[in-house]
Image (cartoon, rainbow, N blue to C red; front, side, top):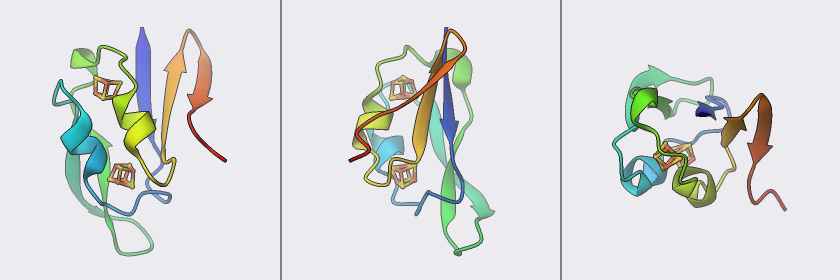
Length: 77
Ligand code: SF4
Ligand code: SF4
């Protein structure tokens, strides 16, 4: 079972992950982070199929995936 975790302070609210998710797990939130961005939020975790498209798509590497207790962050160069 995978769990998606978005870091609100790393998110710039671009919405790319929301568009990329085939399951409608993520939404553009209505809360602002400290930089003034409406950060993305996980609103339907139960629909996640663990495809990682959101993690790969995020240009700011703000999304981590937790699989069997271990957090994975993708494409952080
Ligand atoms: S892993 Fe796939 S299904 Fe799950 S939130 Fe990310 S894009 Fe959506
Ligand atoms: S792709 Fe990354 S920066 Fe853009 S809204 Fe999603 S989490 Fe935020």
